[in-house]
Image (cartoon, rainbow over all chains, first blue to last red; front, side, top):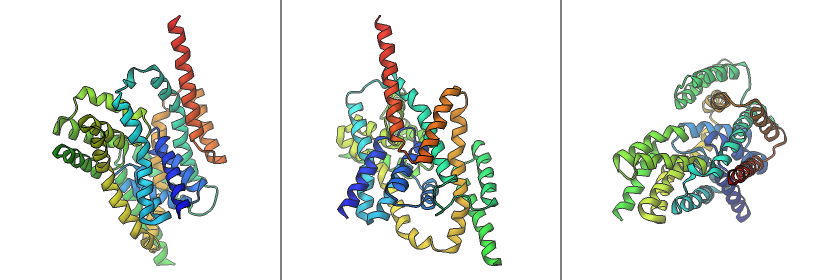
Length: 186
Length: 180
């Protein structure tokens, strides 16, 4: 139990510390820790949590910490993981604010941000690849032709700035209609 | 004490209504922190956004630390972070407790089968915007990172560290050139 909690703390400290580039970039980091490294979730469960995170308030890093913490070690786990993910941001931002470093005038910071951008884009793409072509069969995101229809329609709607919460809900309803129909018929 | 509670309360509201995360919440933060409370000037808010994006971690969290610290020091930071975290923590905990049972329901399962490809689409969509206008060799770097992380399961942390190192080296070289 203690070992599991320590692993949770270590994983979520890393996620908090290296969580550059916003929610979707963090997904690949979270996936790497939670699915690949520790096997706490399957691919399918991982994408379910992303869906839940879209529908509930709060950043995905926090949401996943609370959820996975609970799955792995109950309420203690969820408190421990959520605290761990906050600690890097809390300490770093306090230091930055304390000394009020003018980051936007700092060449080093500018240069680092620019050089990290292609990495961040690659991380987002890897999160997508991991969900489209997972290494194992448990919990595939794409199970039949309908999956690709939902994917393409959502992609088109999303590039036209349709609200993501709405898209998740609509695709859930589509799932109920398509696969529920199969259940009733067969 | 009163001020601490105000900070907590403002960030509780921000935490409770920021669906979709990240940039979607900036207008809400702006409204609450600048217009409602007058805790920051517009000019400071731009600084704050630069800071919050350059530093690791969710923007909401970084903003909370910044504003809290500015108002009441580190206690203020803690009050603000607690405010942001509590709504998502409570909601996700409730979901986690009940979802385990619900997940076995055939209808819920059908809904999630529909949502999974939509989630992938939501992840793919911003890539198209981000890569627009990117130089071809930078695109190649992105593609290489994506492939290595996906295929061999290498942790993306290494690439972030490498990106940061390259950035520091480039800035150092530029600095030297300016000195000359």
